[in-house]
Every structure is written in C-alpha cells, then in structure tokens.
Amino acid sequence: MTAFPLAQSRLAALRARMEATGTDLVALGPSSHMAWLSGVHPHGDERPVMLLISRDYAGFLMPSLNSASARQSTDLPFHMWRDDEGPNAALREVLHACNATRPGLSVVLDETMRTDFALLLLDQLDTPARRFTEDTVGALRACKDAAEFDAIKAAHLLNDQAVQAAFDALREGMTERDLVQFIQDFYGAHGATLEFCSVCFGPSGAFPHHTPGATRLERDMPVLLDTGCRLNGYPSDMTRCGYFGTPDATYKEVFAVVDQAVRAALAAARPGALARDVDKAARDVIAAAGYGDRFLHRTGHGLGIDIHEPPYITATSETPLCEGNVFSIEPGIYLEGRFGLRLEEIVILRPEGAEVFSDMPRDLLVRPVPG
Image (cartoon, rainbow, N blue to C red; front, side, top):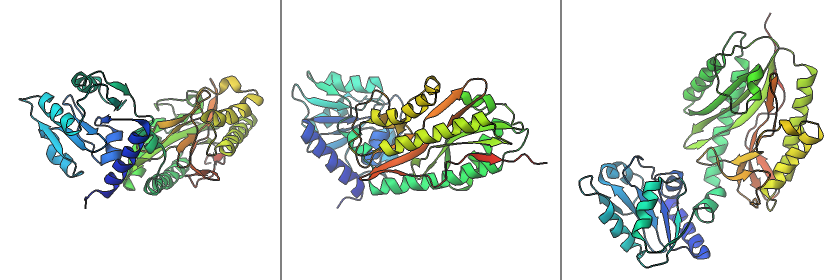
C-alpha cells in the first residue's frame, strides 16, 4: 500500500485522461502541476527535474542533490544524475522505463516548464507530436475535490478576517504600504503567508494592478483592497471597496453598478455555461450603465494551487464550465484621476450554480473619520 494515496488516486485519474486523449507520455517540470500530481515540489534551478508518466510507469528525472528532500513526499522511483555526469543517461533510462522510445509518441509537455528542460526531452524523442496539459493534468486540476474545497475555504475565511481588520485599522495619514504591512502581519499571526496585496487609496484605485506606495490616506477618500493569503498550500483572493469618510453620490452609484455586475455573473455561472457567457453577463450590466469602456480587464480567472490558473473568464473564451471549477468574478469600473472600484468573489461551481467562498458581505465599507 502506497504511503501517498492522494498521489496514487490522481495518477490513476491522469492515466484515465491519457487513455481518453490518446496520450503516450506526460512530462512535468518542477511546477504546480508536479506538486498537484505527486506532492513533490523540488528546488527549481538549471538542473533538469521532470516527472515522466506513461500508462504503466511513472518516475522522476532527479538531480541527486535534490533527492533526499524530494523523497519525503513520494514513493515514485527516482532516476538520479550527478553534476559530474549530466542528465542525459538518466533521462534515457526513465524514457526506457516508460516505454517511450518509439517514433511518433503523443507527448504532453508542462507549459510552465523551462524551455531548456522541454527541449532536452524532445531531443531524445523521435518525431513526437506534442501539446500542453489543457486536456490532461490541466483538466483534472480545474475540477477541485473536497479536500481542495476545504483548503480554499479555510484560506478565504482567514482572508475575511484580515480584510475586515484592515478596514477597521484605517487611520488618516497612514500610507498604502503601512496597510500592506498590517495585513501581512495579520496573516502571519494566524499561520498564513502573504500571497499578494494591492492597497489603493484614492486615485490609485483607477489602476487595476496598482503597486502600493507612499500615498497617504486622507479624509473622504475611497479605498480599494485586493488581497490574498496562502494557508496550507492554497491561496485566497478577494477585493472589497469602501470609503474613509463620507462617500459621494458618484461613488455610491458606481458601487451599485459593479455589485449588480457581480450578481449577474454569479447568476450566469452554471455548469455547461461558456466562460464568455459569465464575462458577458457582468460586462453587459456595466455597459448599460454607461461605463463599458471603463471595465478594463477580464471578469475572472481560475484559482487553485496557483492564484491564477484555468479557467479564465474572458469575453472570448469558449471553455465550458463544469462542476468543481473554482474561479473569480471581479468586474470593475476605473475612473482615472478619481477612483477605481472592483468587487471580487471566488466561487466554486456546484450543480445548482456558483457558491461563494467568502462569508464577508460585499457591502460598501464606510470607515468614519475620527473627530
């Protein structure tokens, strides 16, 4: 009996996908794909590391320097190589064990793997037909299991606490970087690490990928907070907006439009819907309110081990959504020189529709100015 049953279960599921797609060999680099499938996430540098999977064998091309630490996470065989001998002989050995030496193999390559690793492998094969992981490992990762749901849920419940604490901590004169540090410290005190954090005071929010800086919080200033932690290997991601002081009429109007767009996208997110249908539902609401050219990005992205992964919720994506998909719904309106307003939920698709991970309401968060 294997000591790593989850890895064995995922390996069996991958082999079923390989059979269904006519795939002979899957090659994964030291990436989130490898971590998801095997539990192994070895040090990644210029030394080639690969997990090669055929329909009846799986083994690692592994630098001997990394073997001891990697061995703690897997019982799959290692084909090791040393710096003084190079990886080629070990690679030929694992390919032979995979019965992957005949011409014309159908090979799936990890799209996140270093190019030199991929070329090293392809140079050993005779006229392979190659593609990326979308219909094999990627398809499996896109449908989260119960354990992944629990991990993502826990990260989001902690994120709820951090975001509420951050809005409660708003003080006149503090900088965006001050609030980032507050949030990072909050995560650390609760056993998590900062995955990312964008704090936007006032006009900073009009830039969707703003880098927090020295902008100071002033009275009657909008606040956009997009942040996430990593807890037990999985991230959270959420955006909430509010006001330090008294929000004006335009801000409240835009807030209502963006919240309506979120609701429309949530309603459209059902198994069998196309990703573009969800994007369109949000985009139509914003366009109807006269802000169509101020919605500057896609409606969402998938989330799992990686903070951004398939499915991507874009206006052009024909990807059919399926039960177990986890992705963001985050429409926004950006008024340069004034403010930006984005509201984001991460959802999982259930048979009846989208279930939101966060328990924190999307209400307009108003922090009164003391004194």
